[in-house]
Each structure stands twice: as structure tokens, then as C-alpha cells.
Amino acid sequence: MEFAELIKTPRADNVVLHRPFYLAVEGTLCLTGHHLIFSSRRQDNAEELWLLHSNIDSIEKRFVGSLGTIIIKCKDLRIIQLDIPGMEECLNIASSIEALSTLDSVTLMYPFFYRPMFEIVEDGWRSFLPDQEFELLSSVTDEWRLSCINKEFSVCPSYPPVVIVPKSIDDEALRKVAMFRHGSRFPVLSYYHKKNGMVMMRSSQPLTGTNGRRCKEDEKLINATLRPGKRGYIIDTRSLSVAQQARAKGGGFEQEVHYPQWRRIHKCIERFNILQESLIKLVEACNDQSHNMDRWLSKLEASNWLTHIKEILTAACLAAQCIDREGASVLVHGTEGTDSTLQVTSLAQIILDPRCRTIRGFESLVVREWLQAGHPFQQRCAQSAYSNGKQKWEAPVFLLFLDCVWQILRQFPCSFEFNEQFLIMLFEHAYASQFGTFLGNNENERSKLKLPQKTMSLWSWVNRSEELRKFQNPLFEANSLVIWPSVAPQSLQLWEGVFLRWNRPSKFLDEAHEEMINIIKYNKELQAKVNALRRQLAEMETDDKM
Image 1 (cartoon, rainbow, N blue to C red):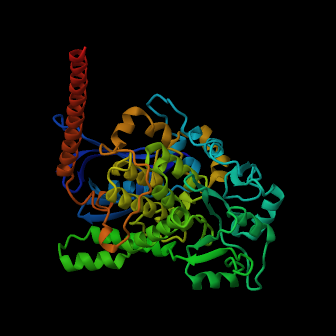
Image 2: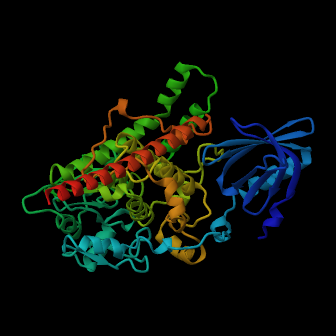
Image 3: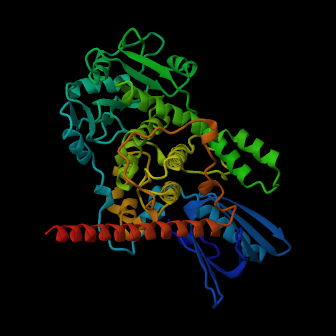
């Protein structure tokens, strides 16, 4: 298919662009296969807007006489308005944008056509391989091994080719366990706690069904993670009633009689359409211009967004507490083990492991616990808060995770090497990007699409020194301790940087941030002078003694 076939009117002049807090600008609108490009004609202040079609969530058309207006609502939550003279031109442009922003084939998306203008110093596709992770693990324990059982994605289609499992469990046993777990997602290592040797594993639900089916290999596998005489905790991210209902469909949970050394705790975390509805309500509340306090607070509460944040953080803190304070190993799962499970395992690691609070450590966490672990980004991020078509699989699971990280970052502003902009950038690229990193639903699909050969990795761009500067937290001081966030309702706040950034001017926030960086820079200069003077003084005292 040629993109030209979908573009009925490639260019329109005298178009007026409206955005909140900016003056209206007149210019030319151009449509290409992947971008909507607006450029102003003003000599004194030439302005350009490049918008990826894949970032467009929905469009609305309005007409007053022959003047047409297109309102474009984006997946990154901004709203822009284009006034286009001529009804036919406006209709043509609107239908072209609709067609180009809803392309069915992944291979027609921009990452397959994007050619970087920067020098590639690092191949991001090879930056965080399982072998490197295993090397770090091997330096502290020899109880685990790399299994290539899933080499051709033949055992579990949503797992990576290589996984870390207990050394005492062979591949034959793993095959049997895979048949006993939903989607064949058998328990694999998620995190090893160096301080006490406890571990966190993740999987999907066991297929116990109504007649209480069991699998001795499964019992042996998860018991292999226990120390003699110690108990473990299974954190099930479903309510007890949902887990019990799952048995009727062939699923279920680990029964005490077969797992006597494990205590099961249910921590209900919502999923799918409930989360999508929550995002839609929250964004609607944030865009409400009525300036009525009661209305704003009741809409914010009705969205339940902060309740979801609290539920996820509470479960993550529980997992971290079991490992660090109780000295117990943990297994986390829900139904599939691709959504709430990953929120809990990755947030628990941010609480426990200082490496995950560095830029590269966090990137590695996203690769390991989200991309390689099979979170279906293509399905979950297909639509954002403005889409009219409701499909079954969309849910802001990754955005909720990033919001939880921001809540912890806000409570511990000096413990993270990265800043809020880094998290916002990841949110934007998960929904629409020129990079191939978040395409596909698992490693199997990415391999079939040949993404490492045909597209550029987000990490190749982010990890260049000129980009990294934008994402560094000027307050960062390495903190090797476990950090315990407060999950009290009073401690949780609306993430304004995502949900209000298009609804308020950012000038003063930018100035304040600039001032903070200057103060920290000046402080470092003064500290260097103090150190130099101390050295001078010490030298003079030594000379006097001689």
C-alpha cells in the first residue's frame, strides 16, 4: 500500500493553529505518510510542529460556513485545533489523518521508516541482554542457571528465549511446569536480594481447575527458592473471589495442602477496561474548565486513579517487606502475569535495589520486567484517553507503573539519578515513537518483525551524553538503602507533569528548575573552593612543622 493513496490533500495554506497558552499561528499544513507538519510563515518567529500520526488518538470535525475546524486529541494527552479554509479541503485532511493514524500493519509504522540523524554510539538492542544480567547474579550466588528451553519460543510464546531458573530444576521439569501454568508462564527469577539471598519470582496462575489438579514439578520449582525451615509468600494480584472464580475456567491458585510452606496473600489490583475507564475519567476531569472546586475534587475521586496507584504501591511494598524484613522469598502472579504482576515486581525492585534508581538500572528494569517479560505494549497502548473506539485490550498499565515511580521519586527526591522528564519521555514513547523498542507484544513478535535489524532502539538515542543531560536529576546522591514510600492517601498526588502539562503554562516551572540547577552548580563550585583551601591550609601547617 502506498501512503499517497491515503493522502487526499497533501497540503493546505492559511491554516490557523490553536494551542492552550500560545498565540494562534497562521501557516501551512502538510501531510506525509507518518507526520502532520505545520509551519508558520512568519519571518520574525518561524515555528514548526511535527506530530506523528501514531500519536493521534481521535479527531473531531466542526464547520462554520466554509471554515472547517479539526480538533486533534493526542495519546500524550495534548489537544490542538486547526482551522482550515474550505470545507472540501478540511474533510479531505480529516479523513487522511484518520486513515494514517489507524494503520493496521505494524510494519507500516514510522519506526520502520525512521533514519536517525545522530551518530549511533551504542546499539540499544544489545544493551540489556539476559546474559549480562545473569553475569551480575553469578557473582553473588551459584544457585541459579540460564535456561534456553524457550529458544524458539516453543514452550512459552510470551517469554524471552532465555530465562533464569533454579539450578536444581532441569528443562524437562520446566516443560511439565509450563503445562501447569496459564499461557505456559512458569515461575522464573525476577529479583535476587543480595542482602539476605531472598528472591522474587513471577509467573501466571496455576491451572488447578475445579478438581484441584496439582503438579509436583511446580511445587519442587518454587520450593527450590526457600531456605531450610523458612516460609515463602505468594502474592496473588487478584481478590480471593476472582481467584476462586478462575477455577471454573480451569485456572485457580496454589492450594495450601500442596504448598504448605507458602502463605498466600491476595492484593487486588484492577486491570483492563476498569483502568482504561479510570484514565478517561481522570483526563476528562483535568480538562474541565469550569473552575469549580467541588466538581474538580469529586471528578478526581470518581476517576479512582489515585486509588489504583495506592493499591499497586501497597502490593509492591508488601513484596519488598516480605523479602527485606521477613527474610522470605516471594512469588507474584495474577491471571496471565503480564500486567499487575509486572507492576508489583518492578516497583518492589525500585524500593529494594539502588541500581534500579539509576538511569541505566531503570532502563534495564524496563527491558527485563516489561519488554522481555511479555507486557503486551502493542495492545495496551493502542489507544489513550480520547479514543472513541473501545477495544478490549487497552489499559494504562505501564503509565500507572510510571506514575507510581514518580510518587516514590517525589518522596525521595535525592535517591534517583533520573528526573520526572525521563519518566514522561518513556510514557510518550510507549504510546507513539520513532523507535522500535515498544512495538509488538512480546519478544517473539519483535523477533518475527526483525525489529533489531529494521528499527532503531530508544536506548541508542537516550543514552547519548547530550540526551542524558536532560534526564539527570541535579539533586541525586547515591543512596544504597532500601527506601520505603508512604502509601497513605495524603502522601499520593496527581502527577501534574503528565496530566496537567498541556492545561497550564510551564514557564514558571521551567524557570524554577533552571534556578535550582544554577544553585546546585554554584554550590559545587563553592565546595570545590573549600576543598582547595583546606588542602592549602594542610600544606601550610605541614610546612610550619618542618
